[in-house]
Image 1 (cartoon, rainbow, N blue to C red):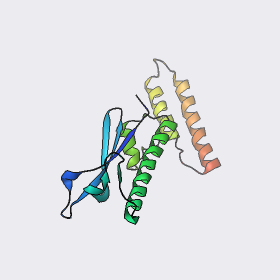
Image 2 (image 1 turned 30 degrees about the vertical axis):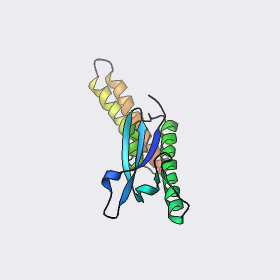
Image 3 (image 1 turned 90 degrees about the vertical axis):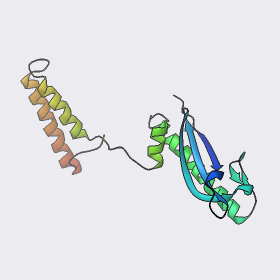
Length: 158
């Protein structure tokens, strides 16, 4: 799986409005899969440069629109950098989640600890003894008490 993304801005002529303005769309391609979204900006087709992915001209509106597109491009590269930094695959699913600000629920320490204790309890008599399970429970209680006394927290994300 590649860590590279490709970015494309394009005007969608087929969705032009009554004033003859075409919406500008933003496409990210990663590993052969696409993520597309509208930018909520419109352009006259005659002023759009498909090769550059920008509006042509030096008017104030053209400069502002091009700066807006540059901000979107920078946001896409920031998301790519974040995914690489945290060790996640640069996939469309991960990219789209980050783009829309959907955060995955953090796993909590005591929750993980309790799950493990439950697994050990089921294995008493096969792989673990009752005394071992009691030590796991005691360890969980000590950890819970430590978090409460030292940090005033009921649990902590991992």
